[in-house]
Length: 338
Image (cartoon, rainbow, N blue to C red; front, side, top):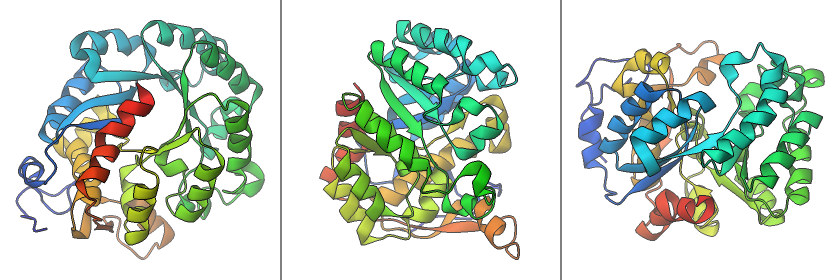
């Protein structure tokens, strides 16, 4: 796969100088794609996201959006966007945001048509509120409400291995990476009648063999490919193993980007901020590209301080066959989430 580089000004979302709109038109897949994992924070952000999404054939998206923003976005984009219930993290300083207000919000999300709830349980959540562990009493109560409303569960359960080597060195506070999964496995069994979507390849793109074991143990568990910088860095290392994993788990892997669409994020790099994520995640799965990612990856210099801040990971495409791509890009999300 050949790129036309050094065409555009460089920024942290475009270290190769790509004309993303041109590159989007060169990608081989032409059928509709669903983005199963994004965050839209406002109507203008939704307009910017879907304008760029159109370049890349993204026809629908599942968005984690603050409750107060849902009606306007729903009115503007209809069934093109589906909503995932989340707390209002902009009000994280109010303890009720994750307790009483959150419990009330779940039913309000359901009334607006939300079919899924997100339980963000990254280890750093403990710095925000004690309820951020997956099996806290508050989370248990929220799960009962959501289960009663017929919602599916999404979970962010762990972060990159690189973070456990740096941010989370204090295992007494944050736990080990392995320990993050103990509560998840218990709850997968407790709520065995619920579909669970584990974001970011269940937090373990570094270890596909272990992820396969979890999928084998829990037939109600599904994963998405979101968190573009992390996925590009780690999944590109697996080569044929990644191809085999996705084919073996046809019907259980959903494609997503984890784009955060907001005024602040858009200002970082304009159209490139969103286009880079679409381009990288499509290039990974449908082409044989083997080269640099266009997106600055802070984890690289965090692990090796001798590397420049602008370092990027390698991106190695696995060029999936059309049948597997159809499942990954569209059919699985339709079957699992709707």
